[in-house]
Image (cartoon, rainbow, N blue to C red; front, side):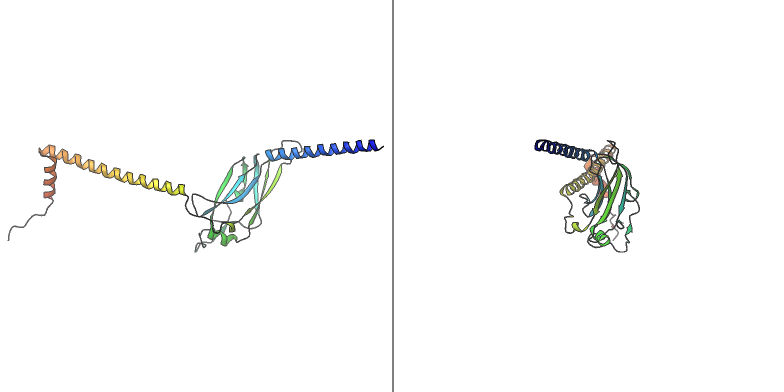
Amino acid sequence: MDTQMAMFLATVGLVLVSVGATSISYFLLRTQVDPEVIVYVKHDEMRPSLLMIVIENVGHGSAYNVRFSTDRTVPQKAWGVEKPAKNEAVAPMSRGPLATGIPLLAPGERRVLNWGQYGGLIEAVGHTPIRVTAQFESKRRFPWDPTDHTVDSLLEVHSFEGTDASEPTELRQAEALEQIAENFKQLAWVVRDIGTAAREVTEVAKRKGREPEEVVEVDAKSQLPPVDTAK
């Protein structure tokens, strides 16, 4: 009897282990095929004072019919680096993917929105994050797979306080190269004008049968005012 009970318990244990291993494998597989849409705030490296909202599918599957809901109003175009811009009312976000949704977001794809600057956003949002709920669908790979997904994200501004908003080195180098190119362009125009003037002097000298230096000297004298000798 004891032997039979031990064999029974061992069999049950093996079944449970097999079910557990199968479940873990299934969920691991799901992480490799399911989409996951998140929403976060990012600092724009090329425009130092600008904060952006990024909607990104960090999963491995395509997200269909992506819709968003928030626990409170999301402001838009809140400007002001240190303080809110004067005489500019911050309106709620009524356009763009957060408001209208996204029909299809492929793996690794994103949508980027210019949100505003720290001074204006911290005044409009405050220190409490805005909760954003993304609801979307996926294609069924197995008959028992769920096709509806929900992911919560947070939009917050407070953590950007005191962060570096200076221009990156790459941007300063690019601006310096643009300035050098502009200086070369202006120098090329000056050299071209000098060459044009030299050719004109040479042509005039040939027509008058004089040396170019003589023509320049005569032309310069012709520009002098007449001398009044009647005294």
